[in-house]
Length: 293
Image (cartoon, rainbow, N blue to C red; front, side, top):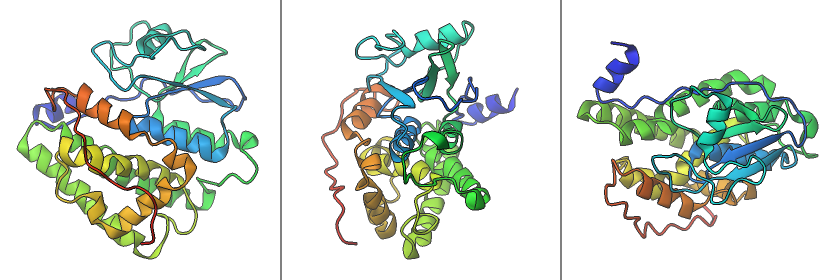
């Protein structure tokens, strides 16, 4: 039995590895970023694209929030790739691919195939390889002097928060759930303390770490708290984290790419193993408008 098989047999959620990991060349108009507004991994790419002014470098195609057994579907055939289902682009790139068809992914107009679906690498490439195409005054989200510290914090946030909510939500054994949810709230508690005396995770300036944390926070009280049983505390119960999340939401790159309707409909109507009825709740009613802490 492989390590993955052992983890799954123990009731733990194991995320599928990314299939395509090609490098992106800094060329305007070459790439199409394929996303779902519901997906936190895709959300971070939309935030960075907007912050850095890379709209001309990366066109965007958005799939419908409701996914069925055929995978992600475009509401209408994508005008650039011609695809109706994301699976068509995966199969055109690798006819033998038999995993889940995930977003975000980047389609390359030069090759007519997917270049990458390696979501951690996409934003790093935008920040480092595409600097010549950044808008004037764009923030340095991955400053070289902070990269080891950013990487270390990102690793913890990914394992226990970004992916941690999935480990809790998709756990099929009590021990696996307990392990995941306890690690999740240990990290949230630590982040609450970290943000007591700073605006962002690394001080006064936005970084890649903030981009990676925000999509999970944006979905926390709306989805993860109830749907994924991450209900020890709400985001709104953390004064510093809640202030921080609303502060980010007030930035157009964050707030204007946050679609709560897509988020709720995707999680509640698509993940029938957790919510068999597919009924989408009306609440919670949350005011994300920034107010004084």
